[in-house]
Image 1: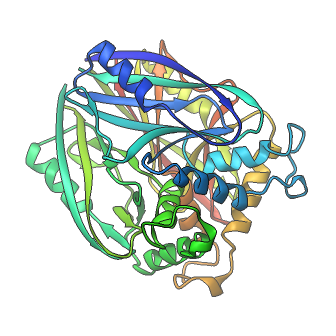
Image 2: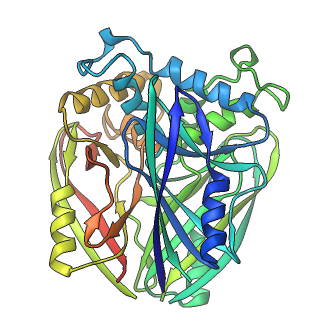
Length: 139
Length: 139
Length: 139
């Protein structure tokens, strides 16, 4: 059994989806992983991880808009407001999506569907540096 | 360490929950898996995976109705509308639930609670063929 | 490869978040786990697991309030009502969050961010005893 760790850093600049499928794939190729699981975990509670369609960018716009409407940036709605109007909504959006995803690898490839990509979903307005831990376990 | 893969295909016919606990259990028994993790990942972004109560079917009706109301099939709300009024809501419902679940196996059994079952949650209106990758890692 | 299982029981008393990071950490130390994955799965569909901020308790209050408003305890909205006004909303809140989370362990530590903690999110009103299966796979 082999285990490897890798911290992927992503610089974000506002609320949207940032695809990182290629960076994950590059790490798999460099390490010649064949079969196993990559456990992805984002080390923050105001951004999240999702697997989404990577064909039409409009899907990402609609996703962002839906979550914005569902969880309004209106400080009157929350007790925790000291870190900015976008902070508490960011924690809620994070709870509604995922902090962690496990992806299967077979014969050196990510087992994702034809139109699936790996995305960081940034929920804060200002620039951030986000850390996504990659942990491979397998052969 | 042992690893095995299996593609479960499920034919769906409209928006509802489809239980597949028995198919997963059958695969475990056939392969005599004892202890390990089964990583389940659905290869689509318009259907999802959830663990839910399998005692009262009304729970599934209420779940479907809640998500329909939360994410209306109203094309005026979305930019991405070319694939049908149910397509963008399907992507959003998928983001609100899960594409991937890891289930633990102990002594040949799925570690699920008494009332828990594994479900595919179909979010499209038309017939679909859905692929759920099963990946066992363990002994 | 090593595998270990542990059932953590948590006594809950109403709708809120219960942190269990320390109990999980204690189990890791006692077993001297070095590198691997802990797969956490809650054996219920009316309580869930989330990774959230453990700095300001107001975050937890706002989370609970948001989910209460999004999924009202109003029996007129649901078919499944026999188990109490909080039961069907609990199943829905569970579907919107997570039944299962995989956490990576490196050099004997949980790979969580600085402000991240592991929480049980209780969605029922009455006292409950909840079981969270811990399953370690690694070395």
